[in-house]
Amino acid sequence: MKGQPEVPDRILLTTVNRLGDCVAFLPVAAAVRRRYPSGRITMMTRRAGAEAARLTGTVDEFIIVSGAREESCVLRARNFARALRAVRAGRFDLAFMASGDNSATCALLFLGGVKRRTGFDDCKLRGLLSVRVAAPEEELEARRNVRLLPAAGLPEELERPPCRIPAPRRAEAQSILEKAGACGGRRVMIHPGSSLAGRRWPARQFAEICARLLRTGLAQPVLVEGPGEPGLGAETRRLAGQQVPVISQLGGIDLLAAVMSECDLFVGHSSGPLQIAFLLGLRTVSLWGDTNPKIWGPAWEAERHVILRSPLPCAGCERWDPKRHVIVRGPVGSAGVNQPPCEHCVEGIPADEVFKAISGQLAADEGLVAGSATERKPDR
Image (cartoon, rainbow, N blue to C red; front, side):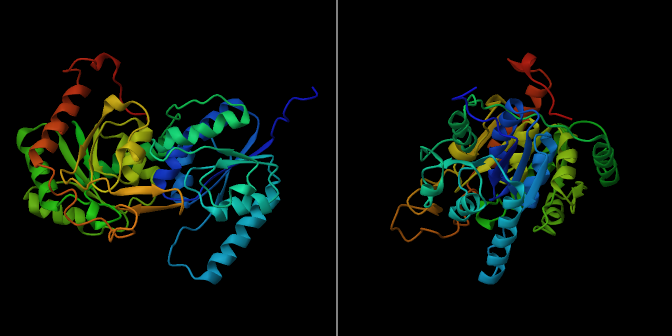
């Protein structure tokens, strides 16, 4: 009918930053899939983001981009050209650009010939967008992303996307846990690592939590290492003085999610694995320092998550600078801008407080506290 917007057949979603950024964009993917069930949905993202998106079944295909900051200018130019060819070949009718995606992504959409390009007005090249959406400075990233939807005539829905673990991965996860010595009973996955050392609670304190869990019989702790954290789990186990299972080299987000889904609780920092726990609907206890849970905290089922913050008055120093379109730390113009978080940010969180939160979460999952009738296990 004349005057009605054209129904898009080919839709592009872009989220080219870290894993957490992609998870925060998946509600948009789920909403687009509900609205256009027969449309071809492509996501431009990093490899880890693609692995997370595959768990939801909302995306048909992916354009994988590199995220290495140490790349040379020549390599960046080649990667841009490769992504541009892929966008042009897709002949997309509609695109949504995630919060935090930079000007290079905006240029890709424009030069790639995408007909309708929707993004936020804090992008430096916002003039290349067809539709610009106002971007609040401090808001849950997932909540911010779904503000894009009404611009394309879709309802602004913030729901946890459906997430399923394939049966072969589930079986592999069970085998990994059994070989590590985490057989039966309740399991607490503990991730002592983080991308930045300043975001890590000391290994000796994680070791104390492991020892107390075993001593009280509350649950079996399971330590997990990321690819950039070799030896951290073993060191934590040594400090605990107990035979705590350590799992490393899982080789992908899908297998991490499968192992996680066999556990009752996730304990860790503001990190990619925490965002996967949010996506699965797993209960969590998380420790926060420079990052802001008002931006990166759980976007749904808040009652299933306990957030513990650093006692330092400067904690939460990481923030979004819309004028520069970058993440900075500290007040504008201060010496701390663009510096890593200090090494003492999260260590002041007391171990007793962490253990109390873990105990409360395990009790809630067994129906021992009010409101437990509505609780459920994570998606499997």
